[in-house]
Image (tube, one colour):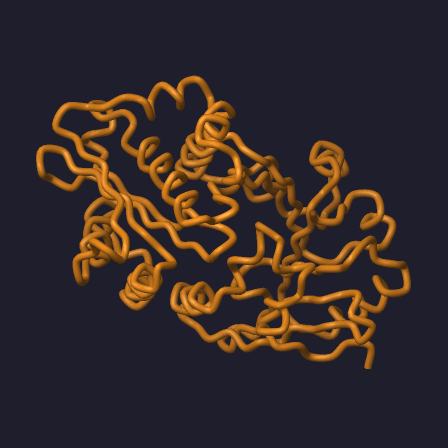
Length: 323
């Protein structure tokens, strides 16, 4: 056998993967448990390593659907450099043995060129926004849009902005956020257990809330989780009736979180993805959220999501190695 099984604990210790800002946090045990609760299923580890150790494929199998992913996210393939033709073909043959629908994620050299390629393999092309927290706060802010810089400098009468972490967290406050989210959205979008897992993250110093109050009434919550490497913007909810009167509600909340992540000595802050192309299209709500996040300019990494592994010519032409 060219490939053999590898435990996730070994993947975490692999230097080639542990420094990947877009992937490292997905390996954290609390995040993996959250993904299972979010998707309401168990994922069985099926990760693979090539015997020459040149290729690692973090991989899980959904016990309900029997589909392969990495805890619900597209499959990524890691190597120390450009994969040789022989190793790539061996990888493709290994992947063909896995039944069911699969998606693959690769960083791309030129997002415009790959969009213009119009390959049927392409499901979407995205740009992921990361803030490099090694910079000073002023340097970070200088990349933001001018409108955003103005908004985060404003203070509205009667409004307070707070960070809630392990030191000042009230028991079960995460469920106040959950109930608030249900009120605003009109439905419960994920399980109580997934919210309880967010609380577990917070109590283990791997998460925090931002809370916005207006005249002693809570009008917004946001939750952020992190490991020692990347802080991730996980969820947010706000009272829409106040959007026009307190225009910087989410802007200032996210800026506070960036400062908190820097204080926590995280190396990167993941704002979120922007869709550059989607075969299925995205909703107006998704477009609005992405427009907001795009104001937080930082380091943009471009990725393609494919519905199958492409041939080697496609790989060599469009795919780059992640630094």
